[in-house]
Image 1: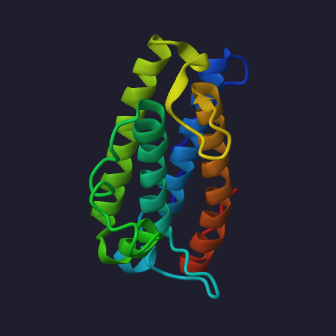
Image 2: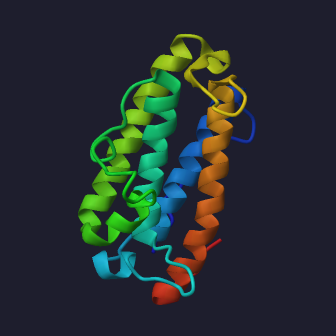
Length: 176
C-alpha cells in the first residue's frame, strides 16, 4: 500500500490550509481502502458493523450533504437522493455491502469532485464567510463555509481513525 498523499501546507493562507487538510484526509481514506476488493471492503471488525466500504459510501454521502444540500440548498447527489432514509437511516452504511469496490471508489471520487466544484464557486462568491442556504434545526443559524470545511476535516479525521483499525483487521496493513 503506497502512500500518495500530499501533506497540507505548513505556511499558507486560511483557504489553502483548510483545503490542504481536507484533501489530505480524503486521500488518507483512499489510501486506507486502496487495493481491496468488495469482500475486503465489506469486512467487519466485531462488535462494530462498520466497514471500509461503508466508510467510502458514508463519506461520499457526507460530502453531498454538506456541500450540495446544506451549503447550496440543492438535492443530494445520486444515489443518495432516492435512498429510502425513512426505512434505513443508515442506508449509506448498510447498502455499501452490495456495491463493488469500483462502484464505491467511483461514487466517492464523484462526490469529492462535485464538492470541490461547489467549494470553488462558493469561495469565489463570498469566501469562507459565505453562509449556507440551510440553517441548523437546533439553533436556526446558518453555517459559514469556514465551519463546514472545519467540520469536514473533523469528520474525515475521526473516520480515518476507524479506517486504520479496519484496514489492519483486513490484511494487517498499518500506517499512521
